[in-house]
Image (cartoon, rainbow, N blue to C red):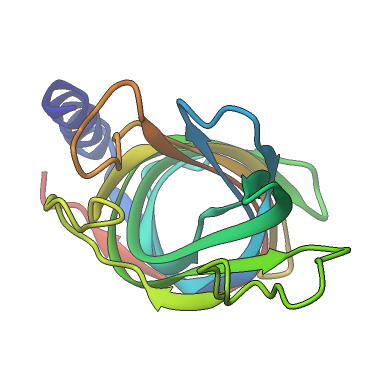
Length: 237
């Protein structure tokens, strides 16, 4: 991880020294996250994506006509849904669990653009660093054909929603720090930006750090943004 960040910084410095000027632009983004998680050891369960959102600001530093460095600060919802069946006193009960963490995320992307006349096509890639600030773990239980006098409560099962506990302690749900990479493509037209990206988490979010219970974020993001007019800043190098 450290070597990757060092290499990125070196490349950025080298590119900046070759330019006599750079254009700085600001923008806002919002959209839909189709979130998922890789969870080792989750056997016998039905896995589903957890729809969420992303919203935040961005800054773009143009290094040349076709190459930019982009960062920003985003609120990004992630997580997962899964369902499984368990047997209690001979009764089959269906459980639905939704994990919905919310992260403050800082991406750093290298963006390559191709001018198509009325629009610019772009592809981008780079690392991101996220920190969990909130979220919920929701569990719902259902069962059909319960015998007379038997309820889910009498089986000790109650649907509940609890705040996610971030940390590395035994009672924690997820580690707070998330690190990974983003890749994607987009179209820029008249200051409007449309994007499709994929974020792959590289950090094991299991609080115990167990490889047998490894947990990593995976997110497909669809977003729209607006880029404000930039200003040209002379390079000091």
